Amino acid sequence: MKQIIYKITIVVMLFGVMFSSCTKDFHDMNTDPNNLPKALPAQLLAPALVSTLTYNMLRNRNFNNELMQVTVNMTDAEGQVFRYDYRSTFSDYLYNGLYSELTNFKDIYKIASDTNVADFNRSYMGISLICQSWIYSILTDTYGDIPYFQSNQGKDSLNFQPAFDPQKDIYLDIFKRLEEANTLLTFNTAISATSDPVYGGNVSGWRKFGNSLYLRLLLRISGKAEVAPLVTAKIKEIVDDKPSTYPIMANNTESAILRWTGVSPYTSPYLAVREQDFRAPGIASFFIDNLVNWNDPRIDIPTYGTSGINRWGIAPYLGAFAGVPSGYAPGSNLDRKSYFYSNTSAVSLQTEPLTGMMMNYAELKFILAEAALKGWISSNPETHYKEGVLNGITLWIPAWTTTINPATGTLNNVDAYLIAADKQFLPNHTFDDKMERIHLMKYYALFLVDLQQWFEYRRTGKPTLPKGAGLRNNGIMPARMTYPVYVQSTNRANYQAAIARQGPDVISTLVWWQKP
Image (tube, rainbow, N blue to C red):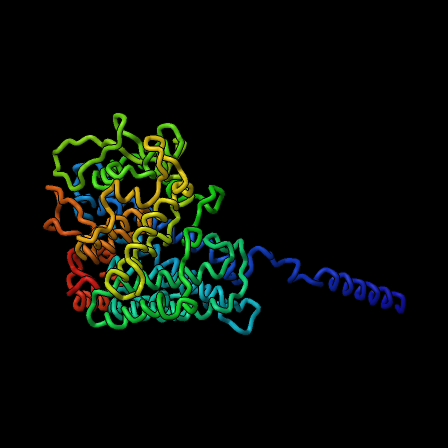
């Protein structure tokens, strides 16, 4: 009996040792280091940027470009954007997409702001605030009053019916976010270079983008008398009084651009568009005729050096560049003429790295040109204007300023370009003449930048666009997208409060900064 008890005891002891060995470090062995229970800011940033740009770029292509006479969809069907006629279902894509990405950027801030864990990082917090400001500004400029203070609370607070906030309140709070971001980024806390496809981990680049975005949005609402003193004083503070406190972009390399590499996940969203669909719209006469008349190097084949194809991948028509008048009446039976090549070509916007545009340096220079022309800052508006034109071209053709024109033997430069285009500033030009020039050149600098051409046209009425006979909406540029249809039923009370304050949910209702 003693021997039996002894053997049982030994077996139990051995089993205990074996069990202990099997379960030792069990949690560590069975935790996938690549799928942590909590996503980190370094893991969230790049996917959120790629997705946001995807929504922006596709709506730039099929909405902004159609309204702003970059392209013309060659059809007589109903609901054509280039005729100022689009269905309410057009609204869902951008609205749903950008709000979904706001959740990711808010998570970045929430995780990075936890001072009790190793993930605390002021730089990710600042970058998150800049990206939130960027997205909210696009949403409110597109729709008007939108959910802001209560948005994206479904996951944490179960608030699935957020209130719509007045655009004025949204803008003023965005400015607070950008102030906070600028302060957070002064610490220059290191971030992962691989997590940042825009600046490669260069925190100062994000800070300059944030302050440049600040100037864009200050200018956007500068026409409202109730905030004009605040706005103009802040522009002067950023540019003249405290430039070291508010650093801004200083050259093209500091532009906020996610450059597509062609390697996943950094493949251009335009590649998801079928080739035949990408090249289906014709290029509008307004867009192409100016470039032809100016001998613009961005569409000049010899300057770019690729036989038959220019820098923007535009196909010639019968040996020349020609466009279609936008807003043409149904039944006109027009030919498509020039169009954007698809990716089967040597050069195409479908594979172009620079299409991931958030904000470029040329836009900033035109912002400064307008501010200087209006006397809000002390610098010379003509200098900013010329630098805007120059950098708008050299972003696409860096060597342009050192290229000899073989026809004349002279050096191509911005002065010669403006004289040939008859777009220089002259002593007899009025304020309105100069504003028209600034915004015409800014229009080309904003090519591919989400919906900014449309926003700026709504703010200024410039550049002057021709009006086709087939335009709807009384020939008046639409002032907004309508809210998605489902919002009317899922958030009815707040939706009704928004339209009671802002105006009817139609494309002709002006948003706050457009109203007198």
